[in-house]
Amino acid sequence: MTGFTIRHDDELERDYGKWVLVRRSLGVTSFGINEVELPPGEAIPEHDESGRDHEEVFLVLDGDELAANPSRLVEEAHTVPLFGGRRAVLVKAGSKNIAPAVETVVAAPSTECRIIIEAGNLGKSAPLRALCEKAKTAAALPCYADNARALTQLIDDEVRTAGLTIEGDARAALIGLLGSDRLSSRNEIRKLTLYARGKTSIELADVTAAVADASEIALDSVVDAAFAGRTGEVDNEFSKARASGSSPAAIISATIRQVASLHKMALAIEGGDTIEVAMKRAAPPVHFTREPKVGEALRAWTLPRLLRAMEQLAEASLDIRRNAPLADAIAQRTLLSLAMNARKRA
Image 1 (cartoon, one colour):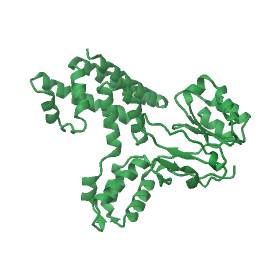
Image 2: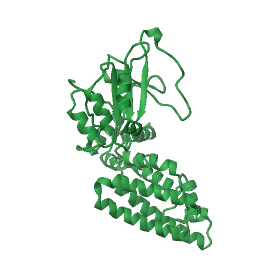
Image 3: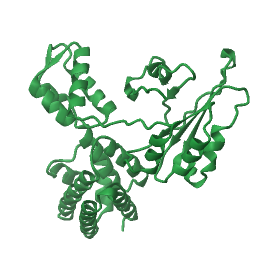
Image 4: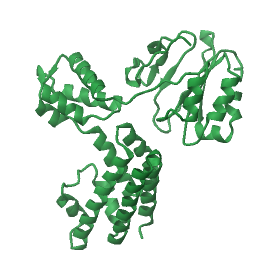
């Protein structure tokens, strides 16, 4: 391998609706790579590429399945398509170690199959990362979270494309409101430029009026899902909060603030207020977009149970400080525990 190309997902060509032509943006000529975004329940229509004299084959594997059956990856890599052509296998790494499965493929690579592994934040000593960095037939490509410098460049590029300029104080405020997820940040900036259409320059007042805190929204979502007992949403929202730049400690801190707020509202309800009135009288009042889940939480949690949740969260916060390498696991486990307790409604 002589080099590689890095492109953010939101920088890829999207001229064909839900289909994304990854190959063109990466300059790949030896095989095709397409990305398709499908809503739940929708499938890709059956089709073939026989008219173009090549076979289209793709496969998505779950990392946890590979951990249980390491030999499957090398089997898939060396499987010969019925009508010829090359294959591409996408592996989505989960919580289990898939290094043994990848090591087998590295030892016996296929010239007719490309394997792409999508993993999370891997430390230098992580077995999967170490294996790919040392192997001659593999490469580990980092995708760094946006820092202030990258955000400044992104803001300037988007504002310039929109034919606008941005005041210094407005740029500084905007950087503080954006998270580390490139796609979310780009969407927020484009929303701001649309809001400022007709002006020549974006001012601080425009930023205040148009831009929501993407990282704060992600925090609200995971916290509300936990207290509402939405166990199925907690993992997904936790991943979004991490992707937006929120640390495990910050997520637990937000959860502690929310349990204190729920406790105050529960006291008001015990004093005669309705749930709706208690949410409106809260400081600050519950935003209307959060009212359904916060209402569910107030119906599910009693005052004694909220006090026990406070104790549980305080212990989790202390555990995260003591065991930083396990911070993600501790925070996620605590939120899932809260969600399961909320479902008991006892």
